[in-house]
Image (cartoon, rainbow, N blue to C red; front, side, top):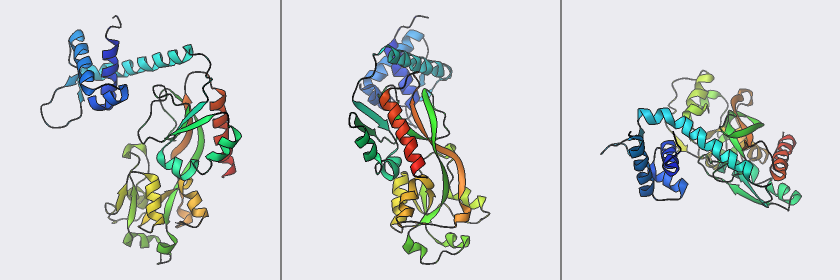
Length: 302
């Protein structure tokens, strides 16, 4: 089959990935109406429907069976095209180094150390992308970044940077009110970190209590926040007990803004921080320098 309607294929792929014409339009810098028209023309050319049309109910798009079957190969195709275009480009001589990290990692770890890199490498203009959403390194010209997970991301190389453990933390003021045993937590407000989806494997208060054989605890109550840095700040402010992520709370523990509860119950998790960069076979000098700097920072902060 000839590669006709490439614009329509791109509109379909983005819409299917986001399950939204609006989000696809934002990614491709066009209007939702233009996305809808491109998808319609593609459907007419193929002679099939790619999305179920619903007059009411859920606003998100629903893929048809045919679209679901074809989407993975189309996505891989665009990834390969992007990688091929990267290889056609001349050597990267841009002075800009774009680094993608989560807002929490930027606020609680990277920003307090980044001056060291800028002083060592004044020849590069450092830019931080702190989107909550998962960014596309090829489409958005991201050079390097740090991701939290299990180390497998399509189109990216990944190198382990830091492992992490989880443990309860609270403010010194709340601690001094008397938290001398696990049972004390049952009567204290809990802070919930919703920054990661349930399927990621990040522990919740419910799983933490079950691991330590504490039952009949209402873990549905408490302040719920979808940003790990804000969860930490709420704990510092004395609003409750948080499940502290060791990498993100270490500086607050060292400065006395937080107290680690029950150190013997610190538990490791399978999620970790990885340095990631585009899988194009070549690593520019600036990407290599930032990767080595991150690894050196990790060694120095152990």
